[in-house]
Length: 590
Ligand SMILES: Nc1ncnc2c1ncn2[C@@H]1O[C@H](COP(=O)(O)OP(=O)(O)OP(=O)(O)O)[C@@H](O)[C@H]1O
Ligand SMILES: [Mg+2]
Image (cartoon, protein in one colour):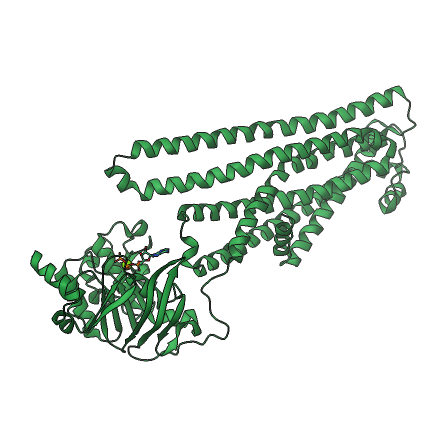
């Protein structure tokens, strides 16, 4: 916990100038508050005093000198005006402090957010497996919120309050240490109470935070699973689950409100009890004290209420913030399993298609081998279709090329170079990709395409992917927003758009994982012919349609992680292997 605390401070210290100015503001405001307490007694005395008045001798330093140097007539205006000046300084310093701290905290959170976004892009796919994306996401944004609150309310306010308290304690001790000891006798009780409250609130806040994250994840499931829920008439059950989660959240929220409601009255009661004790003692024992000094003392005690109260309510944000920060730091420190090797080279841009090779490639998930000793060369410009039963390892093979996954053993080469020795950036720059699961952003068609490549001709990419017509028919054409995950389009339209996005890159290697499976076979073939006519890329396509595969230069058949057949489709058809059998079975059906 303290390591996290220190690390947060190190983040704040990255902007030493801003922090120093903020501290200056806090110190200035605290000093002004102390001065205000000192001056309030003598100022009030002016109202009641008749005849010539002089500044009290117990005000020390240059202020005392200045006030005592004033002739009695002038003092009547000088003292209130000094008070005014002090108040103005206090306001100025407070503003300075608040502005600098807000700037510092917001920037620190923005830095953290940026670092996290960058990290999320680098994390290996394995990181997201077995986690609910909603929980990752909700956790992520919730945690950032908690860190922000811990910084702005916990750290900033506590620091400011600590400055104020120090100044006021110092002033009241300097005014009269006996009174301070007397009044301070409730202080230990106060500190104990604050600590208890802070602990109670802390437990509740952490619970609240976890339940909120779970609720967001559940809500996300409700939204993204809406179709499934409706078809299976499962809404009622889903809503029951949701309602239970909400009830629990309400209960925790209520507990937090009860604790919070007790904080202010308790602190106020303790401070007022202290004052009453002092008054009692003073009225019983005659203390030889000038009345204005007593008024100033009371002024200091009353002014100390505010920071005390504020510390007790704000310290509750620190621990949830630290817990959240610890989680975020863990995410930041998670090794990006797939990262540039030291000394990685950039793959030089080459005109025209590139060749690929797999040498003894094996991929294991835990104990299970999903690709076994794959050896394969693909020539530059070749069009290769990968077929085989579901779960055979086809998608896994494609994932190896842009290094979404590294093999457990063996070497994958792109343009003759082992992919592990290339920079990820340059490697991925050479690859156009349409994954098995289409993902489109909730942005305009044009913006979605530009993710692929900014410079390319949009119409050309749309025409080649067979998407031009339906895009033109959309209400706002290229500017039409697609809705979350592109849900405003049909499945086949989404596939064609993501193909267009891949084409925008004009990459020399095009990997299509059942990229057109939602289209009618004729349209799929037409589009693939258009891609062939472009002829600028090596094309690897995973498909379950044998007819499509037959139009390719070579067919690779995978079964249970092994490459069992490879060759031109005509040759495979003549043999009696998997492909020929599947082909015969398919023909039999039609
Ligand atoms: N992250 C993972 N963890 C464990 N096993 C995995 C993981 N991803 C894939 N697998 C397993 O690896 C095997 C190959 O998966 P892959 O996605 O490559 O199959 P595929 O040939 O593309 O199948 P399909 O035609 O259904 O898309 C499957 O048996 C699958 O269960
Ligand atoms: Mg697959």
